[in-house]
Image (cartoon, rainbow, N blue to C red; front, side, top):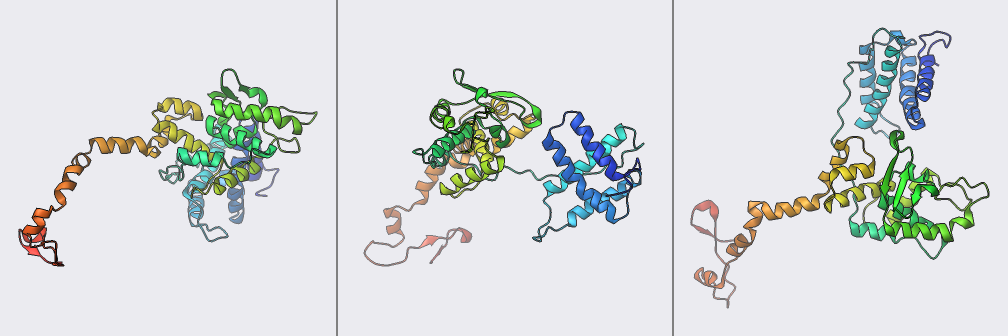
Length: 356
């Protein structure tokens, strides 16, 4: 508790009111939980320094908190990542921005706080088409669980959806005739319709006909993928499950649900898909987010490099010119019948020869 809860400027009270404001204004529960996780460390830090009221927080205090996050070390001795630092500070910024808009504070002390710059990172791991197929064949489809898992993996790969979107998927979301899947309230509560391939649909049909009826309860809520108890699969369980299959495929690469999303986008780009279609598939608001995959899809770039780079175009002729012919070797004193060392011209001594 930071400050007297009856005090209208008490930080704790205002944080609770801020979280309620987010819910009232339609923000997702994930956003609200993220904001709460960002503000709790800030409240604790302020309490340790007897900063109890919102109107006591100044820009120098926030900059001191930012330095604290930079120097902070976790239990394992590792610092917070730049992304973690930025997320915590963005939560504080959002909190004070809302207080200023609601006229609780005259000035927003976080308005000019300069956040740490995020590194420009690409997806760390992307599977090739062959590696994806290897992962997809890991489930034992002779068993009901294997059929479900194969349908689940195929859906992840074909539609490129997020983990949270898959666990919330319902049977009625699939349009078998049109070959589409309706994703309701994806990230940012945005709906979208994306295509799903025939092979994925074939496995989903088999799961729906042979497996799901065995597990579904009378009070079936219609979620597509169930566990053996008839309940919707849990997001944490899904992460563990997909990671297990990726690990046992022994590709030398590790990852989970998002690995299929990254791989799908990258492979589509390499096969010539327009970036805006990939953006629509992934549900990205900003094209810049999707553009990351243009840098990962190196295949086409390698083809263009090999076809157009001057050094690559003359590589063949240079290679043949660099290989000594038998006639040239004989001129250098090698007759093929003894172990005389071949003399090579040393480019550093202008026309003179040097022995190895």
